[in-house]
Length: 400
Ligand SMILES: Cc1ncc(COP(=O)(O)O)c(C=O)c1O
Image (cartoon, rainbow, N blue to C red; front, side, top):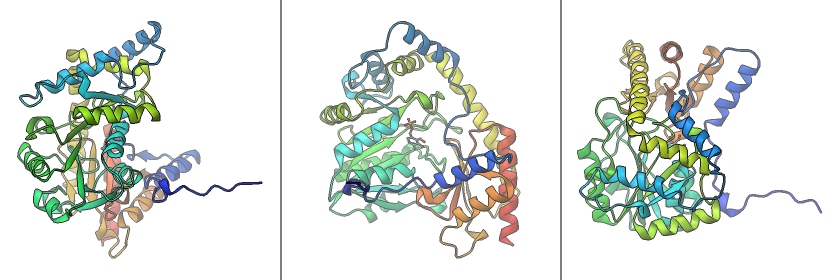
């Protein structure tokens, strides 16, 4: 008997990433020999710093090829806790037992969503937000609730906006600062007010801080610095972006002990632990602080230089609604004026930009804001400036 696949109810609502169509088309055009400037990628173009690569090689030679504990090797968990303690005073009692190491920060986000939310629960997602938040909440069979950010305030949300979207079924909030896709950063006051509301209402907060160390104006505050308490807070971070270690797959959560235990049990049945060698490489990244900081400062300086060079191009079109990014490595802008009335102006714009100008970017539909597009500047400065120049030119031409 032949059997046809029909999706289980677990994945009934699962959507393929909206970024895939553009990136597949970009690959096809490249295969045809066209020169494509790829500003779609959400990952650093830098190689992992040499001292971390060496630590990974040394871990192989030292025979670290066996299973580790589900929650990761103890010294790495201790190093994460030690860094968190520096935010005190409320973090001063954090220890390794509050930390779970995971396959990238993505798995920690998934662990938290799956262990905290379930059928009937609503989770507030300040929008635009990274595409996986909506999917993760849905895979937990909870309901993602879009809370649209204010275009007059860098598409950020306020406590009043969260309150307006809340119902008695609200169980949690996903926060991300600096934000993918906007690059917007919540100030200590803004973040503190959001966290205070969530604590007062008894909502869980999952704070995704994966871009925190890529900040241009001043240091992005951590939820650990401004939260009124830790009992409703999961802070997720990892080495992928700041340390240019995307492929190593090391992230972590810092969470209350009972939740940490549940997430460990859940992860033990899903993936077990992240690669042993990767954990030792991440250990070098977190404990050889002088070398790591120097590498991060150097990479952030390059992101800043690219951002500033591209901002000079954007300055030529002051009527283009653009968020001036204070962190991460993305520009986000509204292209609806180029396609008035189009339900997905961002997708239409990205398709035209790719076909006519050879520049790949990500449509805002991926982030539940279909009028917008995201341009990554995790690419060489020349490509970023050239790509943004072509995007701005196309927008100006279409808008007429
Ligand atoms: C906002 C956000 N969170 C988490 C991740 C996942 O990062 P990791 O490589 O640590 O799983 C990404 C990756 O693009 C991201 O943009």
